[in-house]
Length: 147
Image (cartoon, rainbow, N blue to C red):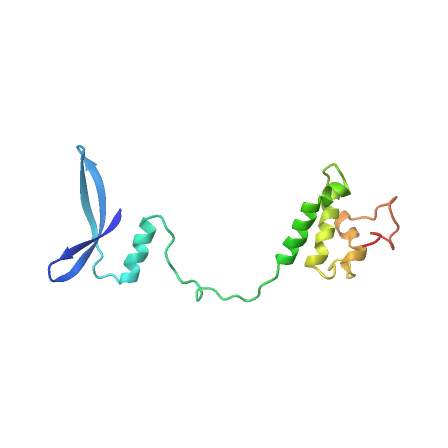
């Protein structure tokens, strides 16, 4: 299907919705609808859709943004940690604990405070991800060290 503009002598062109098909080796066209009375913007939008392109719509008034949360700083921290190979430094073998500790590195960029612990994220939020304190590595008050 396609939109065809057929010129008329001395009057505006006819705008037709047409379909081409083959019959006995010959190519023929069939008119499906007369779009002459449609507004020009509507005809152009239909032509774009029939060509497989998205319609040229102005969606600025279709939605209202109520709030927008920043996320670029989280992506920057996660990308830098990946480029530096932080996950392999934490544990060479992939594991859930390695993923959780890697998430702890990125979490301060997203949340200033841990909502579950109600304390600063950098000091005691390990409890939130693991569900328990590591028994042999550190005491409750000092975990994680140096962060």
